[in-house]
Image (cartoon, rainbow, N blue to C red; front, side, top):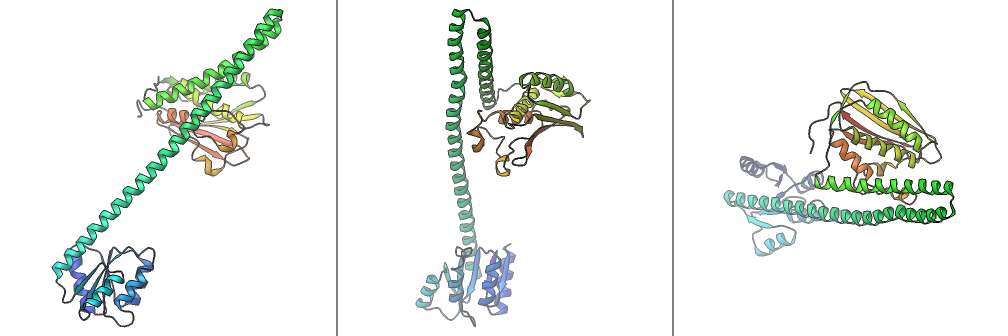
Length: 374
């Protein structure tokens, strides 16, 4: 928008009409004081400023405007009928003006200058936008690289831990076999098997994230009943975590079209996280319901909960909550993989949590999954 400042009404009207005829948005002020009030409230690309005015003259107005942080970059063109000497023109430039035009004004010249200033303004704005976007991209890439390096370090540690444990149990097995202690052999075998299963799960997650990155994560979608899936899943999980009671709240009678194995993978991830992050508790609730041709499934725990500022990042790749990373193991990719699986079923994931009161991780998917979501 352009602001015209002139104490002569005829000048304001004639300039305004000419500029509006050429599709410029125009505002006017009849004094320096009024101009300053408007500059405080509005943003202007250009100010066309009369030099000779009662009260504050044009030079004083320009100097005052240059002191406003949001208006100091605004272009100013001085107009003057009397002050045409070099010293006045010089003062105009030193007061913050970018041009000084003497009256009577050649409208074609003024229009050309206005269009030039507008073009410069648009180019400057685009350059600033590009610069801002580049800085954001650089910062984003730095944070990706940082998370990637951190992930590699964590992955190395997480993979090494079960391997070291298996190696230790194998050495104990050798000694127990030599002694003929069958019970101890069975005990060490069971512990080694547990560590190998953990290692297998870690490798599976790494393979899944690699497939996601390369666009090769495959889905085998068919009809299944989520009620049957949950019943079998709770039975298996109860054997693995006998100290926890897993309760199913609600039911879904309709058949779902999707990848049963991948949906099961998401629910297992939610359940294992719920148990992991709720030490000292003994119950996890699966809330499930059908509404508007969609399935809602949430896993509710009564554990440590998650701070609001951390919730928005939980499903990002490699993200781990700093406070919990010190106490709980994990690669920080399970929720990212889960989110991708649900997205590929045309659904959404989310979390509701209050710090210190537990959390409910949930997903919603349509009863009939779209054939392909890229």
